[in-house]
Image (cartoon, rainbow, N blue to C red; front, top):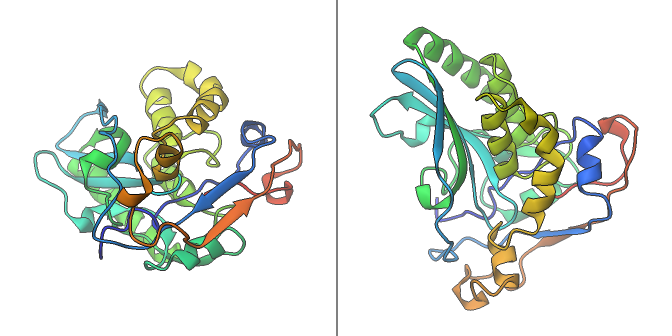
Length: 266
């Protein structure tokens, strides 16, 4: 698999009306570029690690940059040993065809549930939260992850995305997860870290933090080009006119997430 940081991004699913408020009046234009041996030059990301728990094994919840709005996933293993691709779990559209990513904004598409390009590269990491566990806890959680991977056969922006996949793992471990999964991956992981490390007030900051991330000039490749931080000629080949989808404005609604009008970005 080539450096495909762009077609492996993930979206967020609405679990509460809170996320609709975050996206009110916003028209999100999102795109996925073609695979290339060259990636946009991204600024070093904030990869500071907060750790909780104890034991010789770990689960590290991560978010990373991509060409659109990012990806949320979990890396796991034994402390002190470098993780391999088999030690990564996350939900994303299957394969490298960006059309699958586009289709997933409208209907569920086949999914991949393991490593995606860029997951183990620190320079793309935007947030992380590590939880230390015993061998018994580790084995039990890995078994759950394998079961979750086996049954998570589709990816959908609205119905089940990478944030929702990671939230299921967190809940199995007895951790709290953000109240909405329809938020940027960086905000999702940062908020998870805070609410599980003695900052309960962070639950009330979810909206404001997501709004702040919307205007972050280093949020993704598109935002960096718009801010003049990188130039189109440094972007992956084919990104000048990639397949794209424009998501219409999302309106505030008190209806359940499954029936709420509008559709988020990934």
